[in-house]
Amino acid sequence: MSVKHHVYLVPGFFGFTNLGELLYFGHAYEFLKKDLARRGVDAEVVTIVSHPTASIRQRTADLLKAVSETASGDDGPIHLVGHSTGGLDARLFVSPGAQVSDALELEPFARRVRTVVTLSAPHAGTPLATFFLGLFGQQLLKLLSLFTMYVLRFGRLPLSVVFRFGHLMARADDQLGWKATLLDQLFDQLLGDFSSERRDAVTKFLWDVGRDTSLIPQLTPEGIDLFNGGTHDRPGVRYGSVVTQARPPSLRTRLAAGLDPYAQLTHTIYAFVYGQTQRMPLTQLPLHTPAQTAALVQAYGAMPGPTACDGIVPTRSQVYGRVLAAVRADHLDAIGHFDQPAHQPPHVDWLISGSGFRRPQFEAMWKTIGDFLMEEEPTR
Image (cartoon, one colour):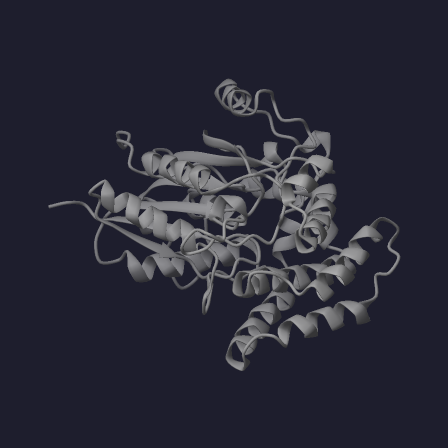
């Protein structure tokens, strides 16, 4: 009788799992399910519903609740695949001695975990979190969250919104034009385009984002240092990471984004968050093993510099365990949010970086993840 594997996809920062037709892991979920079926693996793939910006401990408690509800019927192996902050949730889940819930015991499930895969995860933190700690940063986060959901639902933002927001981004460095009233107007305009039912769901989600933002300080380079000090690898678990590096904003990336006004102006948003993410303190960059360094050099032709990032997380912050893949991609490309509308179902991009990441790279990357999940397990 075949062993049943339980695979959990853990979303990242403000990661909605499913708001109607809005799917965070939609493409990754479908590809991984089919890939495991082709291998003849009896596997259940589950996407996790997490509090979007709550603490890592709360998000890990969300993960534990889902695992207890879906993996209690057998003793099959468990695999955790976390994107962005979801990778940190996965690490805490398996950390020996971790306490995340008063209602549920973690250890019986943690000891069943065989693999932890992290994609674009901020293992050494990200300077972008420091920016979001400010009052305007919190307002901007809420608006960017809505941007993401709007684009995934309708394909693109209205040009009137893009032009107004692009104007704000262009003047961001000296803080001119940062007016709460204008942000409110943009927010109301976008929210008004959803159906009444979907608007209620989106509003509730964004209310959750504003109600608990304790995750943000934990993701700063200083905050994550404390997390790493108390979170330890579990013996016998295989850890692997997918690393992403996007090209710095330039004339080349603007040309790669295309001549469409929408693409050009949303590229301005990417350039802004990229600039914030570049500000990683040199003292916070982690040291890598020779094998990790060799994998990065082989993939990129040279060791990524201290300012290299995917627009959200510094590239060298993403390395953990075995480097399974190191790709030219922005932060959302790895989970299928890139520009390829002709594919069915279509891939929709909102963080237009000009990375050039497309379906062939996506499939190759997720096949590599499947290979890692199903490797022969070490002796326990």
